[in-house]
Length: 78
Image 1 (spheres, helix red, strand yellow):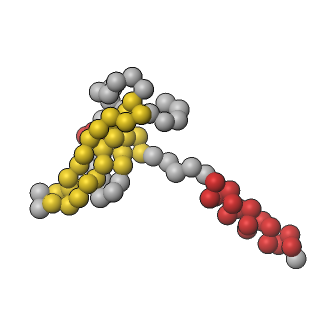
Image 2 (cartoon, rainbow, N blue to C red):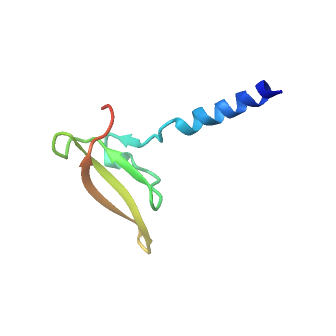
Image 3 (cartoon, rainbow, N blue to C red):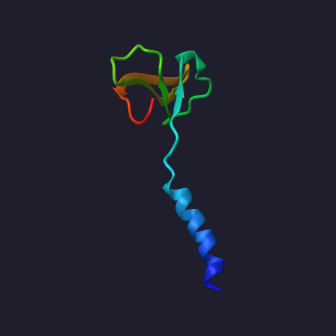
């Protein structure tokens, strides 16, 4: 009976341990559907070495979604 419950518990533990995947694109024009609160990283070479451009969906305005752009420290593998 204990073995029956061990597999689903193990599967949930592995699923919870996987890191969240960040979206990385090569051009800012490749961003088609940014949502408020979403972050997308653009690897276009416009930031200094060791950094990557972060695009953040700030808030909805009558003209559309307001975005912020800034260079942040690159994390993980390139």
